[in-house]
Amino acid sequence: MRYIFFLSVIFCVLSGCSKSEVVNEEQVASISAIKLAPKKYESGGADKNLDDSSTQIEQKIIKQASLRFETNDLEETYKQIQTAVKQSQGKIQSDSEGKDYGTLYRNITIRVPSQNFDNFINTISKGVSYFERKEITAEDVTEQYIDLTTRLKNKRKLEERYFQILQKATKISEILEIEKQISIIREEIEAKEGQLKYLESRVSESTVTIEFYKNLPEQESVQLSYGSKVWTAIKSGFFSLSSFFISIISIWPFIIIFCVLAYFIRKRIKRKKP
Image (cartoon, rainbow, N blue to C red):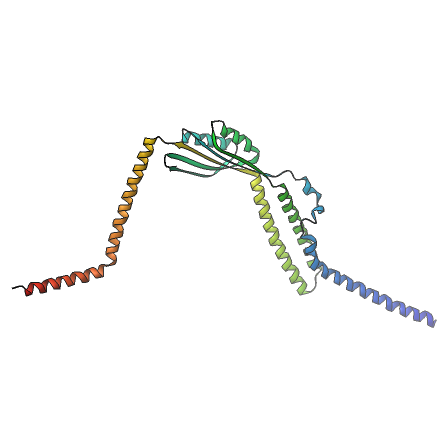
């Protein structure tokens, strides 16, 4: 009986030690999970296999075009471009016009849905006999899109993991540290969401820059140039006269002193005369 009792005591002691070791291992695992969680989820390249659906994303292409040509009628060409923009469901982003020596020109920047890009370019090209510049580019950003999408998913999974750890945390120091990490991750998520939206907007809408101009007759060009020079001279003379009056006003005390001195000097000279 003594041997049985002794063995039972030893068994209880050993079982108590094993339980305490298990508890300590769980605490260490929870603390290490807080420290190692960012390393596990933040690497976008290592965890791309977490979701194979990213490989099913369709090709993302950014299309852009820059056109320049001569026309005989600026207003008529502008109306044709407006009609093409409406047919393609696009919108005019910027519109400017001006005059160089002997040339009237107009620059228009248009945003067109990418699916209507080719039809829009063909419609604009129909009335043009010759393009001085016709540049069309197509940039494939599929890999960049997949990388952003994958990193965003990993950040969201990391945030969810931190929320799970936060629910189990008991110490105030651990809670504050976890909340700090969650705040940092949330900022990174919002930044990547903004980058993704900007990339999607560039893919969904193509940018087309159109510059068309009209050459003026030589006589009309000279007249316009001469008239602009005359108007510039008039404005310059007016500004010079204004500056002169302003300068006189700024020295009015000296003018008064000079006039007073001149008066007394003249009066004294008159007294000395016989």
